[in-house]
Image 1 (cartoon, one colour):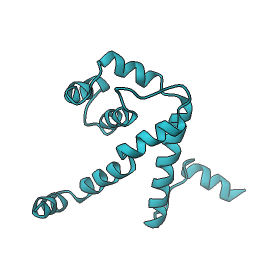
Image 2: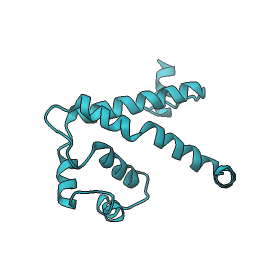
Image 3: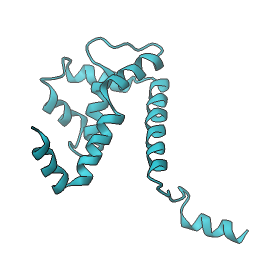
Length: 135
Protein backbone atom coordinates (compact mmCIF):
# COMPACT_ATOMS: atom_id res chain seq x y z
CA UNK A 1 0.00 0.00 0.00
CA UNK A 2 2.75 2.50 0.94
CA UNK A 3 5.20 1.17 -1.64
CA UNK A 4 4.29 3.56 -4.50
CA UNK A 5 4.46 6.53 -2.14
CA UNK A 6 7.74 5.37 -0.65
CA UNK A 7 9.16 4.63 -4.11
CA UNK A 8 8.33 8.15 -5.25
CA UNK A 9 10.31 9.63 -2.33
CA UNK A 10 13.23 7.27 -2.93
CA UNK A 11 13.33 8.17 -6.60
CA UNK A 12 13.06 11.92 -5.97
CA UNK A 13 15.59 12.10 -3.16
CA UNK A 14 17.27 8.82 -2.21
CA UNK A 15 19.81 10.43 0.12
CA UNK A 16 17.05 12.16 2.10
CA UNK A 17 15.19 8.89 2.54
CA UNK A 18 18.36 7.07 3.58
CA UNK A 19 19.19 9.77 6.12
CA UNK A 20 15.69 9.66 7.54
CA UNK A 21 15.83 5.88 7.95
CA UNK A 22 19.31 6.13 9.48
CA UNK A 23 18.26 8.82 11.96
CA UNK A 24 15.12 6.95 12.96
CA UNK A 25 17.11 3.79 13.52
CA UNK A 26 20.03 5.29 15.43
CA UNK A 27 17.93 7.70 17.50
CA UNK A 28 15.07 5.26 18.07
CA UNK A 29 12.82 6.43 20.93
CA UNK A 30 12.97 3.18 22.89
CA UNK A 31 16.73 3.07 22.56
CA UNK A 32 17.15 6.70 23.68
CA UNK A 33 14.92 6.18 26.72
CA UNK A 34 16.77 2.98 27.66
CA UNK A 35 20.10 4.77 27.26
CA UNK A 36 18.85 7.47 29.62
CA UNK A 37 17.62 4.98 32.19
CA UNK A 38 20.92 3.09 32.29
CA UNK A 39 23.17 6.19 32.19
CA UNK A 40 21.45 8.76 34.38
CA UNK A 41 22.59 9.14 37.95
CA UNK A 42 20.21 11.69 39.48
CA UNK A 43 17.84 12.62 36.68
CA UNK A 44 14.57 10.87 36.07
CA UNK A 45 11.84 10.85 33.45
CA UNK A 46 8.34 11.75 34.44
CA UNK A 47 6.46 13.73 31.84
CA UNK A 48 9.33 14.56 29.47
CA UNK A 49 11.14 11.57 28.03
CA UNK A 50 14.77 11.77 26.96
CA UNK A 51 13.73 10.61 23.49
CA UNK A 52 11.56 13.73 23.17
CA UNK A 53 14.56 15.92 24.00
CA UNK A 54 16.68 14.08 21.43
CA UNK A 55 13.92 14.43 18.84
CA UNK A 56 13.63 18.19 19.36
CA UNK A 57 17.39 18.68 19.31
CA UNK A 58 17.74 16.63 16.11
CA UNK A 59 15.23 18.92 14.41
CA UNK A 60 17.42 21.89 15.27
CA UNK A 61 20.75 20.20 14.49
CA UNK A 62 19.49 19.05 11.08
CA UNK A 63 18.30 22.58 10.29
CA UNK A 64 14.59 21.79 10.17
CA UNK A 65 13.96 24.53 12.75
CA UNK A 66 16.24 27.45 13.64
CA UNK A 67 15.93 26.98 17.41
CA UNK A 68 14.74 24.67 20.15
CA UNK A 69 11.89 27.06 20.83
CA UNK A 70 10.71 26.93 17.20
CA UNK A 71 10.81 23.11 17.29
CA UNK A 72 8.98 23.13 20.63
CA UNK A 73 6.25 25.42 19.28
CA UNK A 74 5.69 23.13 16.30
CA UNK A 75 5.47 20.03 18.51
CA UNK A 76 3.91 21.63 21.61
CA UNK A 77 0.72 19.57 21.27
CA UNK A 78 2.74 16.34 21.47
CA UNK A 79 4.87 17.54 24.40
CA UNK A 80 3.15 17.63 27.76
CA UNK A 81 5.47 20.12 29.48
CA UNK A 82 6.05 23.85 29.32
CA UNK A 83 8.89 25.43 27.36
CA UNK A 84 10.52 26.35 30.69
CA UNK A 85 10.42 22.73 31.84
CA UNK A 86 11.93 21.63 28.53
CA UNK A 87 14.78 24.14 28.77
CA UNK A 88 15.44 23.19 32.40
CA UNK A 89 15.65 19.53 31.43
CA UNK A 90 17.94 20.23 28.47
CA UNK A 91 20.26 22.33 30.63
CA UNK A 92 20.61 19.56 33.19
CA UNK A 93 21.39 16.54 31.02
CA UNK A 94 24.00 14.68 33.01
CA UNK A 95 27.48 14.06 31.61
CA UNK A 96 27.12 10.23 31.74
CA UNK A 97 23.96 10.51 29.63
CA UNK A 98 25.65 12.75 27.05
CA UNK A 99 28.68 10.48 27.01
CA UNK A 100 26.54 7.38 26.45
CA UNK A 101 24.57 9.09 23.68
CA UNK A 102 27.75 10.05 21.81
CA UNK A 103 29.37 6.67 22.37
CA UNK A 104 26.36 4.62 21.26
CA UNK A 105 25.53 6.64 18.18
CA UNK A 106 29.17 7.04 17.11
CA UNK A 107 29.72 3.30 17.45
CA UNK A 108 26.75 2.60 15.18
CA UNK A 109 27.84 5.14 12.62
CA UNK A 110 31.42 3.86 12.70
CA UNK A 111 30.14 0.34 12.04
CA UNK A 112 28.03 1.65 9.15
CA UNK A 113 31.07 3.38 7.62
CA UNK A 114 33.05 0.18 8.01
CA UNK A 115 30.32 -1.88 6.32
CA UNK A 116 30.18 0.62 3.46
CA UNK A 117 33.98 0.56 3.21
CA UNK A 118 34.15 4.34 3.49
CA UNK A 119 37.60 5.84 3.91
CA UNK A 120 37.48 8.72 6.33
CA UNK A 121 39.83 11.69 5.98
CA UNK A 122 42.20 12.47 8.81
CA UNK A 123 40.57 14.78 11.36
CA UNK A 124 43.89 16.67 11.48
CA UNK A 125 43.75 17.56 7.81
CA UNK A 126 45.98 17.33 4.79
CA UNK A 127 48.80 19.55 6.14
CA UNK A 128 49.39 17.19 9.08
CA UNK A 129 49.58 14.15 6.79
CA UNK A 130 52.12 15.93 4.56
CA UNK A 131 54.32 16.89 7.54
CA UNK A 132 54.10 13.40 8.97
CA UNK A 133 55.24 11.84 5.69
CA UNK A 134 58.38 14.06 5.69
CA UNK A 135 59.41 12.85 9.15
